[in-house]
Length: 130
Image (cartoon, rainbow, N blue to C red; front, top):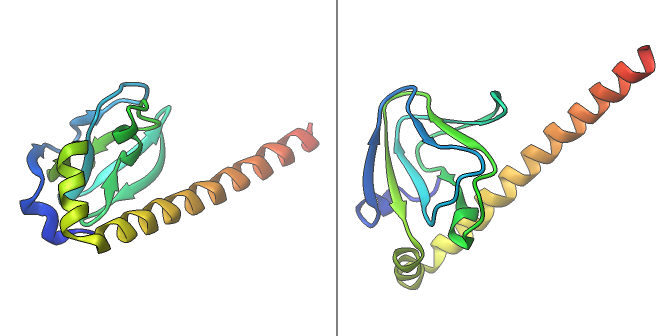
């Protein structure tokens, strides 16, 4: 998956299991690549997915948008961080990186859309049962 070779390009950060990496609604200018360990993405305490090595976190933050999820280290983990300037250098050096990031984002959107559809059906069924 993405980006094992990018570990050396990003700024490393270490998080302990249970440590909050960022909270929903906060803003930053960083994208994260999981180099080791696992990170849970949550909304309102509800688990959306677990990001494993090679996965990315918070690509939208590069646009200055607030985090749409809370990220918590599921295990001890090492993340590589990228700000816009560093990411531009990486993209210029490795054009395939852009395609990998787009594939990861598209996969995440597809999974989240499926989860939303399941939740809408569940809520619809609960409403019919009343």
